[in-house]
Structure formats: structure tokens, C-alpha cells
Amino acid sequence: MSKNIFTAIAVLVLVAGTALAQTTTDVSWSGAGNVFVDFQSGNDMFAQFKTGGNLISGKFLGVDQDNNPYSYGVDTSTAFAKAEFAGGGYLAFGVERQDSKSSMYGPAEQQTYSWVYSEDGTGEMMFGVRTNYADMANGQYGWGGTYGWTTSGKNLEATGNYYEILHSLTDADGDGAMVGANGSGSGQLKVMGEQSQGSSFNMASLPVCGDGAPWYGNYGTFSGTGTGTFIMSARADNGLTIGSDPNPGQFTIPGDGTDNSATFYMEVGYAGTWGWADIGMSGN
Image (tube, rainbow, N blue to C red; front, side, top):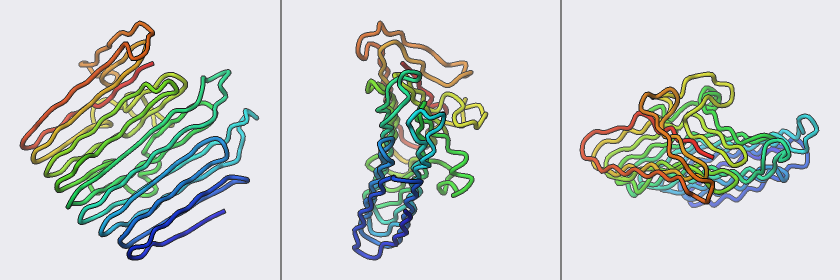
């Protein structure tokens, strides 16, 4: 099944893709109004994308490969969104991994979520997700190489009075990491790779999807101008590592196995031009 939909002024789009064989749901839009896309890949993955504003455009692509690797009973699925708005609007993209070869790789229910909102400015998003029998792994090099990056070469960005740019990743236990910012001026967030498997997660701290590139430094960053607030947080049961390997400033926070016994929170308020060079966070 393949769908191509172009939105016009004040048009609302609802799309559901249910995988019975190899399935591609391809949605493009340009105009004003709202776009809602739900993509269900068998019982393996669910993705949802939403956007609205005065001038919106973009593309959503969902694929169920229906390939059942190694006869594990779980298909490989992908979901991708590249979208923008001007004159105020929002972008929201969430994915849930719903199935796993749990006897080998632990349970499913990993989730990732991205959000951009500006009252009066611009917003952009470029993000792709892959799930399979083993994990949720989100390497952005292949997606960006095929479809292009945001204007500043990042994954999430906003200008004007932007309420928030945010990205989060959670594991099967609901532990995970979040990075976000809000302010007036501009904010740009790069999250080049992340992975979650069973009860563990990493955000921008390890090579993902065969990229082979070091994640230290420029592969998970934030930059902002004007005035704003930047937040990083993470929680886990057994321990956290803050900073990407081999960042010399990397440190660990131990946990004792009880729920959320290891936590991390950092909040920075800034005025002018400010950035954070390493948003890497991992835990289990």
C-alpha cells in the first residue's frame, strides 16, 4: 500500500497504514492547516506524526519490510519525518517499538519522541527511526544523506519565541533520557544516533546503525542564541553514564537496582550565544 497526499489550505489529513505485506506509507504536504499521520507496522511498531501551522510542508515515510529476519517473528520497520513550518506552528513525532525476540534481547516497549513548537517563528525536524527483533536504533546519517538535513544541519531547530524543542528516549522499563530547550531567538539540537534495547538506552553516546563514526562532541549537541533555558535529564535503575565515550569529562552515576535510583538533571539559563557540546547519556 502506498499513499501520497498533498495538503492544501485548512485541510486535515488522517492516514493509517496497516501492514499485511511489505507496506510503504508515503505522505507529503504543503500549505496551511494540520496533518496527522498514524502508521501501524503489523504488531511490531507504531509511529505517529503531527504538524500544524500557517505555512507547513514536509514528508512522512513509514515502511514495514515484512521480512521476519531469522524467523524470529518480528519484522524490520522504519519511520521517518522531515518537516518544517513558518509563521508559528508545531511538529510532533513519536515511535513505539512493540515487539521483540525477548528471549534473546529483552522486552519491547521502547519509545522515542521529538517535538518542536514556536509561537511566531520557524521550526524544522529531520528524524528517522528503525525497529527490529533486537532493538530500536536511530542513526541519522542515512536519512540525512537521502533526504537532506534541516537548514542548520541539525535534527530539531526553531526560531522566534519557541516554547520548546525536545527529544526523549525511553527503554522497556520507562527509564531514559531527555534533552530540550525553550527561549526567544533560536535553538538547534543535533541527535545523530541513539539506541534502546530491553532495559538499556543510549542517546548520542555510541555508534548506531553501522555509522562507525565517533559520537563524542559534535554528534550530539545543542546551540542557542538570544535568551533561553536548556535542560538535560536521565533516570535509570542500575546506573547512568553522562557524556559520550571517550569524552574526558564523562562520568557515571551508580544505582542500586531499585526504580530510578540513578538520576541526573541539569538546567542552564543563558542570554547571548551558548551551546553544549555533548548531550550523550546512557543507562540501564
